[in-house]
Image (cartoon, rainbow, N blue to C red):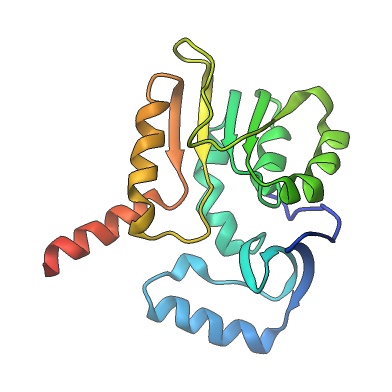
Length: 200
C-alpha cells in the first residue's frame, strides 16, 4: 500500500535525503530491541531505504516500521486530503497514487524540505497536489465546514507527550474542517498517558 520513496538524494542547508542499506546482521539486533521494548510493529527487514535527516538526526525514513505508522490513514484517504508535513513525501506519494483521492494539499513550513522534495512530486502528480508554505500551527485554513475528506498531521520528529498540546490543538482546529482526521503517533501518546496515570 505504501511504496518506498523514489525522491532523489540531495542536500539543502542542514537537511539531507540519503539512500542507505540495512544489512541482515543489523536487522536481528534492531528487531530484538523492538520486540523487547513492546514495539513489534517497528521491526525492519534487509533492504535499501531512504531517510530524511536534519544534522545527525533521522527525521523519517521509508522503512517498514515507519510505513506502519501511516498505513491506516493511507487506507482511509479519499477525496480531498490535507497533509501537514511533507517529510520524504512517503505519505503524499501513497495518497496521491490512489484514484479515489482527487486533491492533496500539503502544508509544509521548512523551505529546505520543500527544496529537496516538492519538485519531484509536482512533476509526478501535477495539479493533483498543491503546496502551502506555512506553519500548520499558525496557518488559517479556509472558512467553512468539511473542506477536506481526510486530514493527517505529521509535523513531529518524536512521538512523545511534549507534543500532546499541539496534537489537541490541531484536532480541535480541524474538527469541523475535515470529515476524518488523525495525528501521527496519537495512539502511542494515549498509551503513554495511560501509563503515566497508572504509575503516578
